[in-house]
Length: 146
Image (cartoon, rainbow, N blue to C red; front, side, top):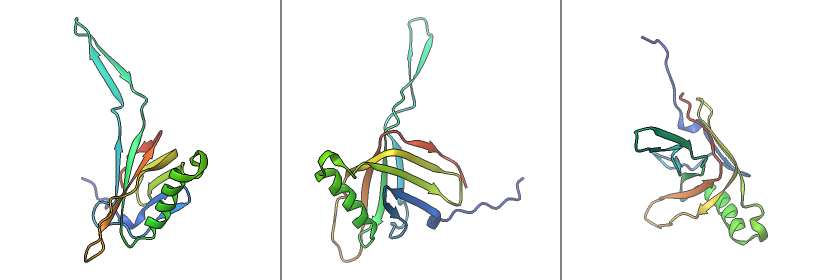
């Protein structure tokens, strides 16, 4: 039996996409989602039952950042999104990514990430969440605990 106390604090999750530090205005509940595109391995079986396992080497990952419509993070992400769509050669639109739980050991980094698509937007009586989809070409991930 362990006598340790573990602590998680959502305020200590840092999201940095290029020059954009998203540290406020995060949605209530889930605010970052990391979804790898492909399995790490594929396997096939031969007629005699021998199994062959191959590494896919596909580390493309979608990261969803969920902020409130009032968040200044929308402004920062919008600038990056517009650079990707309009700058010659997409200069400034493909940037490094870092997501870190400062109170734990989880860490996700990529040298090349970009806004895959802007959020769907709804206007309502109250502030609503906006989901920004980021694509990382080669995510390096450590799914550590707290």
